[in-house]
Image: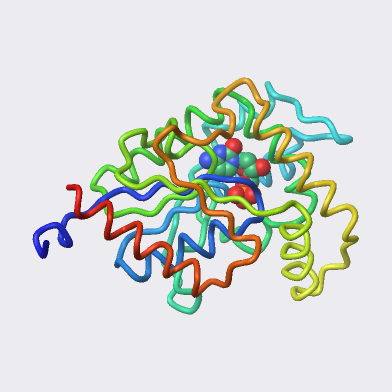
Length: 235
Ligand code: DC
């Protein structure tokens, strides 16, 4: 058993937007001493860069322009001890505080449905997890990025609960936001994520579902510990 505990695995966390995947993944990584990678932050960073460099104009994503920018984008993560997680940088600039705006949220589904964008980011993610010992959250981690992940979790929560959480998060930061707009964004992103042609969001056959609509973080951790023990006992 002790031998198994030392064995590092890949933990893939996929699911709907705004259901606390990152909070959950970050807590697990801290518990296990694993690296946490928020792949949504990578798609958001490409979207921000596209917005700032004219590839998204008048509400329209110019796919060719986004693709042409890809070679200019270098994404890195640096651990921030104050947050207990890694901050994301684009070409050396800290973008962590700029990627979760409603503007980026409104365009990220379109940007993340571009094949070349996914190709570049998936290759980076596979490289980041090559030595295992990672908790990666996203939409296609258990299906495309690490189909051989030892533990796959599919997270979900009711849309209204997810919108309430995002609303609280944004208003706490001082953003002036409208609840209805956030709820609409949550629902339309679910639709876009699940219906896009490339790597749509879907539950891997061997993933286990965690619906955390009415669960505290502590209850989710307890649930995780049981799943982790179960997986280790099979290795
Ligand atoms: O997890 P998030 O809400 O920050 O993700 C932002 C968007 O990025 C989401 O709408 C879908 C996309 N995404 C993706 O297509 N594949 C991933 N592995 C992660 C995120």
